[in-house]
Image (cartoon, rainbow, N blue to C red; front, side, top):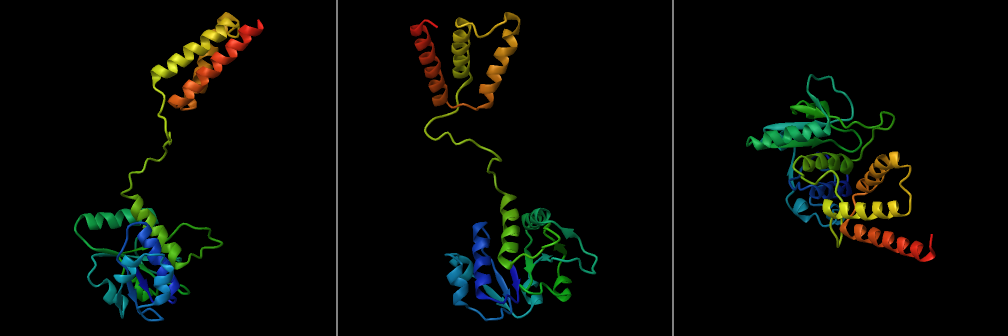
Length: 240
């Protein structure tokens, strides 16, 4: 991540924090306004010392990208240049492709107030624009770094899109569910609920579908079987 002429140490520090959140540790600075090192940057980085300690400062953007094989320039506006314009997701994929092939890649971020100059952008192979509210497109430096870092990290993340935490239990097996269904349906038959007889099959399917959607745990199946048994026992006791 290459920050061109960053103005405040706080912005550098929060950008470093965002980088480390997503496994990125190599930061380069181009002519930081307040010099380097910067105590405020370290203070607000919330322990991202590996990023702060590894910062390399360059006098020019050209110097900062000289050893890279592929560079993406972030921008909030269209430039009068013929370059690919990437979304964060597409940019992250492209960066991974370059690095997987043994290349070195970087992302340019401009000064907080003005963004990158055209002379900076011309050094890039592609530009990156974040889809945001066109009526309020302003992102601060750390937000921009975080967005790119997230998309980068997501490209190799294998976290399932959805999961259920069963805590101290486990998902109910089909055998356990079928046992519960048979128990429930037997009691419903016993007390005359599943009538008229011609509607019994569809009523049973609806009941089973309801509990299937609940993704019940083994503990929940046992609890519901206990509820059915208790209700049946009390109704039999009352003679209902």
